[in-house]
Length: 403
Image (cartoon, rainbow, N blue to C red; front, side, top):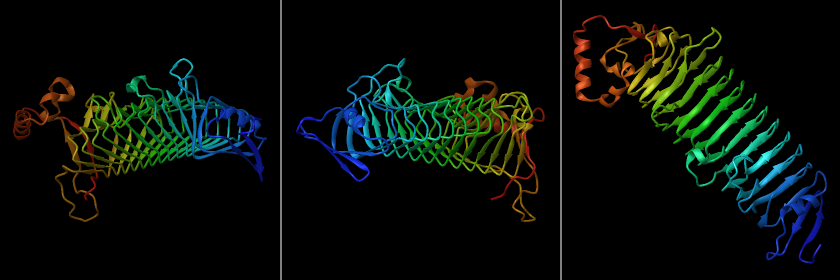
C-alpha cells in the first residue's frame, strides 16, 4: 500500500488511517478487514459502493461519509452477523427498477444502528433477511415529490426484524410485504406519504411510534394478527385518508393509541368471517373530522373502553348496520347526556347515536361542504325537535363510561 496509508492491527480491531488528500474507496478497507474484526475508519468522505460479504464490524463514529455520487446503491450487506454503526450514507442512484438506495440487507442477524442516510432514493431495504436490528438511524429520500421517492423502509419476506428508535422523514412509505413477526417500536415517522403499510404481513407489532404530518397513517391489507399499541398518530389530514385503515385483516388488536386531529381516525370494513374482527381497547380519539368509519352491511368488531372527545363526527357508516352490530361497551362519549347515580363509573342509561340531519353527508358526500354551517345546524335542530319519523340508530353502548 502507498505510504500515506497505514493498517494497524490493535487488539481485536483494525484501525484505518489515511491522508486527508487521498482517501481511497471504503471497499478497499472492508476487503482488508479480517473475518470477525472491527474496522474503525478515520473521519472523512469515502467513495462507494460498499459490499460486505463477511461478518465484520464497521465503526464510523458519526464522522465517516460514504458517497455514491448518484449511482446505484451505497451499501449492500450479504453476510450474517455484520455490524454497521455511525456512518453517513448518501448519494444513491435514481433507478426504481434497480431500487437504488442507502443500504440493502440480504442477510440475517445484522445490526445497523446510529447511521444517517440522505439523498438516497430508497432507504433501508431488507430482502429475505431475518432477525436484523435496525436502530437509531435517520433516513431521508431524494428531494422529489412524495410519490416519486422510494420507501424509507422496505421489508420483503423478512421475519423477526426489530425496527426501533429510527426517524423516517420525507420518504415515500414504510412497506412490509409478506413479512411476519417484525417489531416496529419507538420510531418517528413524519412528512411521508404512507406511514406504515402491511400487505400479506401477519403478526407484526407496531408500538410506541410517533406518526404525524403524513398523507396516510397505518394501512393493513390481508395482514392478520397485528398488534397496534401505544402509538401517537396525528395530523393525517388528506381528504379520504385515515390514521388507521384496516381491510380484510383478522384478529387485529388496536390498544392505547392517541389518534388526534385526523381526517378519519379509523376506517374498517365489516368482517366477512366471524374471526375477521378488530379489537379496539382504550384508544383516545380527539379532534378528528370522523373518529371511526365503518363500511359494509354488518359489524362484529369489539370496541371497549375507548374515549371519543371533541370529534366533528364520532361515527360514520356506509350502511345503518355497519356499526350497530359491533360490540360497544364502556366507551366514553363526550355528548352522553345520562347520569351515574350509583357511582359505578358507568352511565345509568345506554348511549345511542341516531341518524339525524347532521349525518346527511354520509349518504350525500357533496353536503360535506355545509358541515358545521348554521343552516345545517338549524336543519339538525328541527329534526331533533320534531322529527317526521323516529330516526334509526347507528349504535348503542349499553354501559357508557362516565368521566
